View 1 (tube, rainbow, N blue to C red):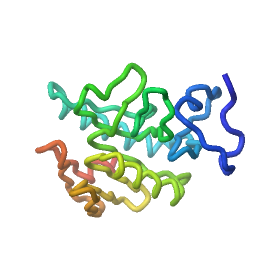
View 2 (cartoon, one colour; view 1 turned 180 degrees about the vertical axis):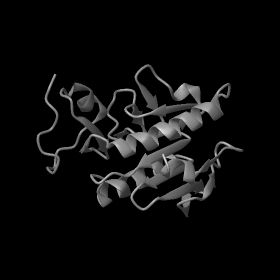
View 3 (cartoon, rainbow, N blue to C red; view 1 turned 30 degrees about the vertical axis):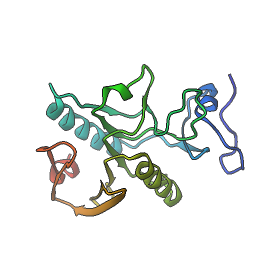
View 4 (cartoon, one colour; view 1 turned 60 degrees about the horizontal axis):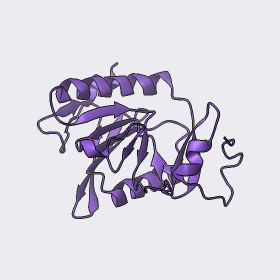
Length: 190
């Protein structure tokens, strides 16, 4: 096994096959062949993640869709030979097509992705994720900003994302999981 890349700002391009060879406690995502080291989440981040996971798990009990939390590899454009160059670990994801669930990864776009911002998220990384989720066909993509207490919801319509921003105590319907909705007040007050 090889070490993970020492520098993430070079011209090296990586694949899922490379990613599987990396050792060490660090976690990475690869987007369009570029590796991004993931920072350890904060207590606030994990508290929000836990609340989202619980609410979604309760709603999805006895339904065909399944909810998962990071770390779990999501191969947005899977290749049989593992030459795909985009592997992400969304904070929360919902998959309704069980054929996308392999033993160790989700192979194809989830129906719902929720990302919780942290100070280490760069504008470049978030833009790359937005484009990757759009191009892969993720039907609904949320970006939760705990600092600003707001959520950007992106819903796939005719090959583009239609975006809405919700603040503080809004109640947000989850379009891919009707009639489920999320009350933001319960999220920020935990």
